[in-house]
Every structure is written in structure tokens, then in C-alpha cells.
Length: 84
Image (cartoon, rainbow, N blue to C red; front, side, top):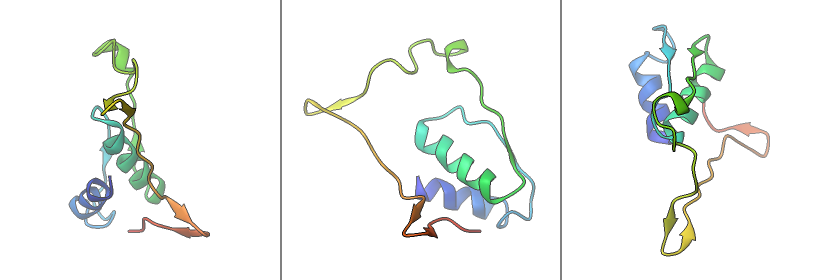
């Protein structure tokens, strides 16, 4: 997710270029786009996944019988992790 956020920031020259975002990809990509939008004036348009993939939110991926769940730091001890 961090690499995706960094890439969006670099592609927009740290927010100097405008961007409208539509997160059709996996959740880390969507989160990266939302973080970028929160730091800038960018707009995020979210479609309903059921229109293009009805089973998009069915169940949780398993790895070795355990749920595959990730967490990402956005703010830690009052310090925002992502900046332009």
C-alpha cells in the first residue's frame, strides 16, 4: 500500500498535477487513493463492485487456514505517516 501511495504522489508531482481517482483494484490500492485524496483536492469516485464482480466482498482469503488480513499505519502517536 505504501508503494502505491508513493507512486500516486510521484505521478502527480506531489499534488501539483490534478487527479481524479476511481479505485477498481484491490483494497490496498483503494486505500492509497483515499489517502492521496485526503492530502490533496483530488476526488475519489467509488463504484459498486457488485456491478462488475458480484462476489467481490464474499469471504476472506485464507493462507494456511488463517484469514489473510493486513493493517496499515495512517497515523501513529499523533503523527501522520503519509505526506506530500
